[in-house]
Length: 159
Image (cartoon, rainbow, N blue to C red):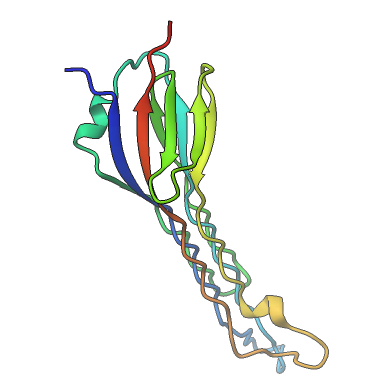
């Protein structure tokens, strides 16, 4: 079976939330903020694989979802960034945004990569908001949502 067109929905990973924590130790009566930043959500990357020659894998894959970044932790520890989701496509694939009709990429070189949907940025913990006027902030940021895209993959025949 030769498949030369497919429509896929992409959900990039959300960023992790920042942490609100305070340092409390015996020798430190006025500890202060101690919450870390959240991790970045996963990007969705398309990469050319010269071993493929059809888009038959996308007959059954209708959406791709990235992982969320890890939340920030106490003791100033930052959350882990999520790993990128790499999708392999054949040489000569054209990626088009369905909503706008714009061509995102024309993959014509071997091992070419492009980030199609970017993951969300992680939120900042309360350690990042400490200032001279507010030495112990009582808040932290939430992570940003990842990008959503509905794309159309077309395979053009290379001569």
